Image (cartoon, rainbow, N blue to C red; front, top):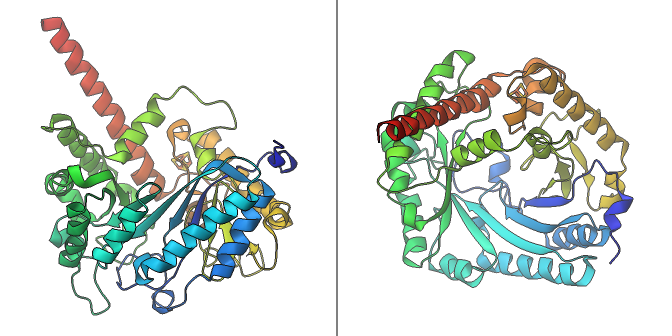
Length: 408
Ligand code: SF4
């Protein structure tokens, strides 16, 4: 079989993740949402033509990895009917069979706020159980969740989210939970943990997000470098609770962070940092067919004027430029140069580089004005405080274990 990827720039990654914005419309108005309120009120959906064009291109050009995840996200996917996704999944699989030049296995995912899950959706999830994973966003107990996850009338949504999770459970459908941490959560790690721990048997995974934007206008979501100790304490306490829990419960932030710390040192060119932003590793397709890369979920609105075309980090529209042309574009080369500068700056100045998950390049540019800068507030809170907590936890564990071995 011919490896058509050999024709591409070797610095490009095979496409492992495709994020499809089926619709930007959302039935909720969560106060921390990345999408603008205007876009979340637009009731358009991604057409079958866009799906056909994009996946025909992807499979024909040979850039797809051997395992590809197709995720519907960025807008509430369940405002479209199950039949929309039945059709989209069938199309994508048909196009793969017709055009893929090598074996590719495809997994699908849907990230939802859970409010619209009903029997029809459960039937859909069961129908696609062999290749589709459901993710639900819930921020924990009702008071923590309802601080920010509200509907367009400003009313709470926790009870509706639970009413969505319950039928998943009664139908035996495992789902991932993703929670956003706010300032109040930091004060209550025990209650936060307990909420998710009690649902552990229903879950296929759990992780939490610290919001990316330290400059949020809301005091309960913003943070500064001065908050490092508070975040360190939150991470440490959660680690301690996990360690003393009556049953194991995995928090992916910790297992992935520990895996980065314990991994053998990577060869140059394969750091975790570089993997996070490998060009073409993740491609986002919006409802109009615009393609962005570098980060999952990136929209054309991010740094719109950076490259002089008003399209942010978009490589163009799939109806105007084939994917193969996008891989050769001058704009992509400029973007790759900027991301390389960002990596070199971090590599040179940051002692956490080898364990950094990466993904902060655009924040650096936004907050500090240059890709060549290094530490941002997010680095301190998301990476450094977490790594410190993990290292101390590992050290404490080793000390305790060797202490009890010595006294045995
Ligand atoms: S400066 Fe920030 S982004 Fe760069 S390696 Fe360090 S923690 Fe990661």
